[in-house]
Image 1 (tube, rainbow, N blue to C red):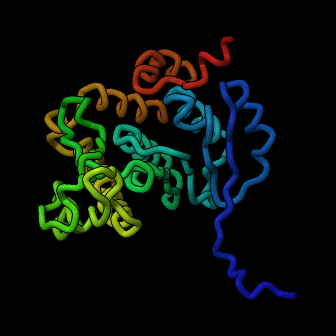
Image 2 (cartoon, one colour):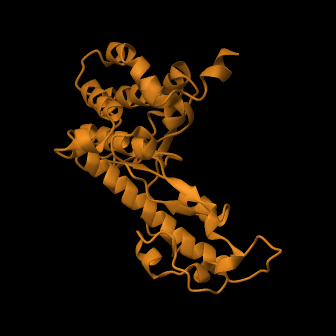
Length: 263
């Protein structure tokens, strides 16, 4: 029986994994012949392996033709940090010099989990030269019986829906003795706000690091990392280059698996 719902629009991508460099190389050699529409980097090959391993993996794959013109996507799993977002944009910029169609993408459940699991509203970050301001905080205080069905303005009006919401749109039930005042609609409203905060923050972060005034808009340590990322793609002996800068790369993001491997 023919499948009338099959339209051929799905883009299949292969996954590269491994805890350390040796495991990543072995994994790559085992699956590199199975080229689809792109690649996903997970575990130690992705952001959880730190920036050193991620760059090593990406450059190794590049040298072996992984990002040829028929490759459309390089996807990173479970990423939501603003600093990571600008680093991944820098990687895309370098890869796109040979393949204009390639996009480096990433996904995160954080905006949804903050709303649906933790009943929290995301707070737009300040950014600037202070690295501690490059994080998206979450506020649980938006759930309170005092706001039930009231007209008190929503605390964060940066998002389009935040401009129109009141705290009473979120807090719709419960009593003085309960701590749950949201319903499913409340959480959908929060998701809308949270997703906007994440997308707007990611855009603002990327604009900051390419601005003519970037030295006043972004941390010096982050700008240094972006220079290292860019230079790595132009080094003939990129392995030696990465080793020379491993301390800085590890300071940005170190492998989560180093301790478990050494045991």
